[in-house]
Image (cartoon, rainbow over all chains, first blue to last red; front, side, top):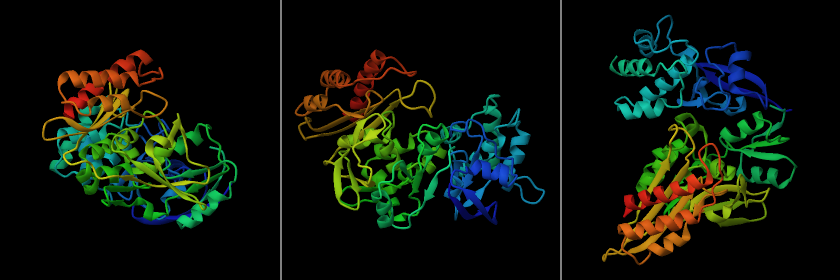
Length: 154
Length: 282
């Protein structure tokens, strides 16, 4: 019913968009900006598929109105690689088999990336707690954990 | 999601003026984690949503006359706050125990309290810490003991034109010890089946001079177990006294049966977890 002009950075680049009040961030990313790396899973903030970073903090893109990211820095899985080079975390997910079907992977990566930045010396308990909101229905949790531990070392 | 009009006031006065217009079906949004789900599921159908994100002063966390927590402080910022840790580690741990890191980064203290979900964590510990909510409208400001904020499941005593500004916690009695325990038989990001906060202080002779017990998930609103508190004051916190207090606390509950258990089971667990909480602080 109301339209809003928003300005934000997306993976480091300044973006502007006009959105309706009820537009969700996940739909803005996937449908308007064609960044389909971010997935929409449960749509109620539980599964973690749509995890993105807003000003560095992991959040559910399915629970954010697009208007809420006006003025913020948004980072999606498309922002992890630099140029053609995958990030050490992405390489670790490949090396350790940190995924099976792949639907949860972008969310796992964005959650793990935020966790590694904030916890350079993490304990096993901390990684479990930080990642418990990112579900993997293939139950690939051991591979995901190995990948995060490996990325800490690299 | 149905279309609605979104308004983003720049100042508190502007926000209060918008609320005073008394336009039907106006909802206030803080972090949005609950409201967005309710709108998606068509459970609430606001014509207007007033977003508070620009009211930066409501994010403040101050160690002033105890502790003052702004309504827009996120759970994550409260869990990380040195002032909150210094006041009571159990309070910081309570905010850290809410849902997942994503929810904690987005959801706010004020949104949590106004949503009035009886299974939530922060109201329980805040009740045990004698929290007072401060609310304001264009007409008045008032202080509401937290116990009087909660009226029923998803219902508070705030008027339509009132905005929750902050929560104030008085200084704790000397030597007070606090804990928050959350019974999670399913997954760590679940709502508690039963949760208990306990705050006690004992004198030099070992008798209890201050006792607060609050429970979550066991009634349509979070509860203070006042009879159990009165039982403990003046007594030594030995096994027998704690056992009796736990029995009294369970008797005060009025659980709703749901997928986390029958009313009978939740009442039994309220006794078990109250006993554990009291042993942790005795």
